[in-house]
Amino acid sequence: MKLPTDTSDILIYGSYGYTGTLIAEQAVEKGLYPLLAGRNESKTAFLANRLNLPYIAFDLDNSQTLHEVLDRVKLVLNCAGPFSETAKPMVEACIAKGVHYLDITGEIEVFEYIASKNNEAKEAKIMLMPGVGFDVVPTDCLASYLKQQLPDANELELAFKGANKISRGTALTMVKNIHKGGAIRSNGQIIPVPAGFKTKLIDFGKGERSTVSIPWGDVSTAYHSTNIPNIIVYTFTNKGTIRFLKLSNKIKWLLGSRWVQNFLRNRINKKLTGPDTQTRNTSFSYIWGQVKNLEGKKRTALLKTAEGYRLTAEAAVLAMEKVLAGNIFPGFKTPSIGFGYDFVMELQDTERRLLD
Image 1: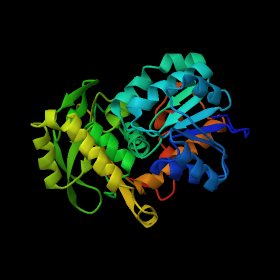
Image 2 (image 1 turned 45 degrees about the horizontal axis):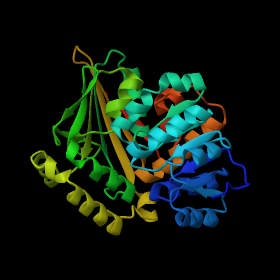
Image 3 (image 1 turned 60 degrees about the horizontal axis):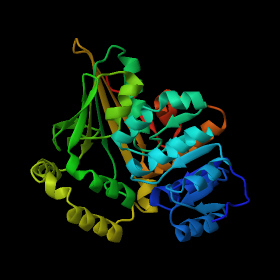
Image 4 (image 1 turned 90 degrees about the horizontal axis):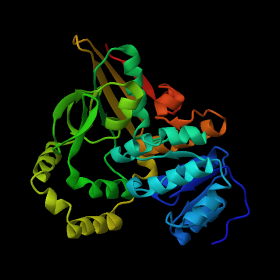
């Protein structure tokens, strides 16, 4: 496929997915003019024509086309998951071509891979900033804010509660990793733990709720942002889900089998779309965080934000605007390192409260 003649500073790859579409729409509302891209030509073209934007369809395996496209832009926002499959070719191409890289991943291994490219990114004078969506902007910013309140903290706990409906892409990534169990950070190292490893009652502002530990992106990123060596992240859920997570440890081999994976993917592709407009505009997310030092001193804070997918669209576009405005620090950066822990406070419907 020929490159479009229109010029743009931004490439949004994976633009026709649920979250990519929200971001593309938000970008247009903010006066940006991104080049849309993805593997499926008809889906990419449909969105581009609706938004009156240029587009190109190509697979990331096509390195020649990828490099030709990157020659024409300053910034990439990767929205194509699972990011364990798309981040590496895109990051390597961005380093080779001197193009800044953002994405909306929540996958721990992807954060760690991109962090390993820190020196190469500095040499290329580009910024690599994964996780400019709900994972991990609010939690990462809250972690850095709490570290400021208790500089000698050596333990960090984070938890979140939001609308339960998720997009197809999020669900597919969850299914791909469902047999892998959980992860926490202990003494500076990321270690695997069983699914449903730890539960905790947490008050998000309206009484205590059941939460369970999950392998959220901050197990990676919060360490880079705060240097706190012990990190665990929880999510609000019900007791039935906690029981399933614990059961899954006994049937990991089955959940990871090809036929179960294919069955679950087919179900997701047929049934899931993501929250509707009313849900996105009227729902909110709640993030709780607590740090503790060796003496047992604690600091606790709550963050209220827009619904997760609405926040992702706003945060991703704001991050792109900042990069295009020259707010750039070469190398691997988390959102709070690159833009400060008040970055999340620049987003609509965000409130922060220190509880101690």
